[in-house]
Image 1 (cartoon, rainbow, N blue to C red):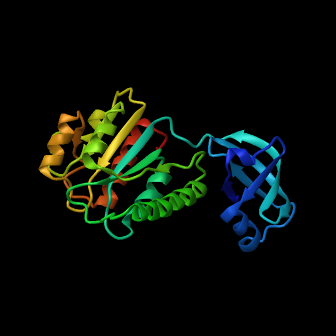
Image 2: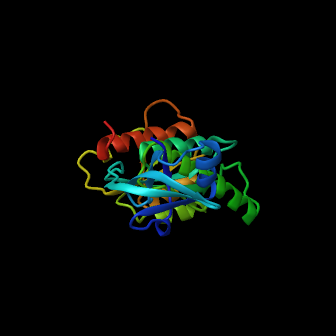
Length: 246
């Protein structure tokens, strides 16, 4: 069924207003008519089954039929610290990570990051695009929230932020002994951070700094994974062991 997110202030006891791009999509692209049904989520894990009641010049007006708690969010909260890759790889990373259940994505600038963010405008343009991809992905896979794409941070700042988590992991191609699963079985961690490097991986200095910050280096297996693959693999394993996958 068609699904949209709205701000809490657009929801009353009986009606919901859908505005902006979603209003245009409903009216001019989907061409929904009065009485057509769809689902609206408040972004805080409440879903509303609604029917289209009317259009105003700037909004679609939907009548609430019933509300339900969205149960599609995993118990484990995972944040992906992703080294910013080249081209449009970040788009895919955001989309698929949200499908797998990530809570938050923090783009990271590392020593081997090729992408340059030269101004605040560059950063804002990237964030606007990435958050839109997050929104569409959350709609597609029936999430109860829209995972946030945070402002890019430097690698050292990412390590500092990772200290807030019960368990912080850094997949590293030169690590051989620490297997990811061994740190997940039996853990009581409620939130996990995964730190993924860009093309070229992490420098040795970055790995040493991460170790000093109590981040655990782990191996994802004997094969070298691309940056757009490594996060999916790590996230899938964490969700299988601690979340709701499998």
